[in-house]
Length: 175
Ligand SMILES: [Fe+2]
Ligand SMILES: [Fe+2]
Figure 1 (cartoon, rainbow, N blue to C red):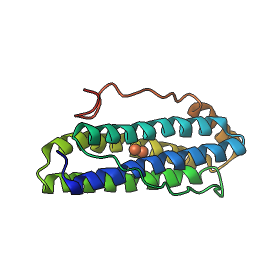
Figure 2: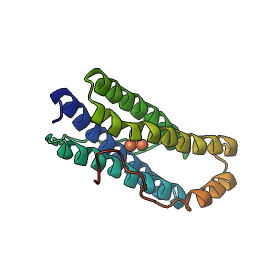
Figure 3: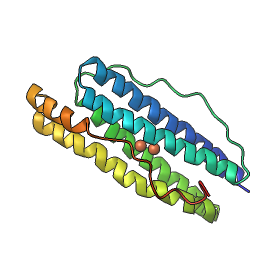
Figure 4: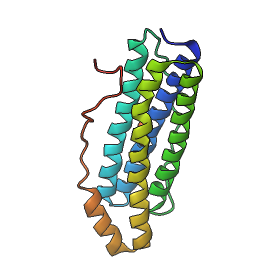
């Protein structure tokens, strides 16, 4: 049985993961509109990852006999001033997600809810990669300085990203 406070907090995180998907989908649309299809591809892969994160939490709540409660998803920004800005925002956003996941873990530990802590550990580890992925592109873009030829090269590289579902799932999910 899932503690009431823990359930509420995981439900709020489902909303945050769905907002992440919304944010990255909006960034993808922005990149499509400025003819950077590789950047758009990277963001669309990220959308799939975020949807999966939300699904894991959704399934976990059900698995623990809790009740999923979906909330309104805020509208993401639509425009950015230059091609580098969405990635800077994505990196900042992932730092915020990490902070939220850590708060969830703190709550699970406070409640001595070991099953939820075990589930959340996957997300703690995932955030290390999420931060690194976004930061890598921010640094590449810093080197190009928004110059056309550099952007074109980065675009070609980001076009190669493919969505690969994780082989190891969070504890308590998909069993
Ligand atoms: Fe996520
Ligand atoms: Fe993320």
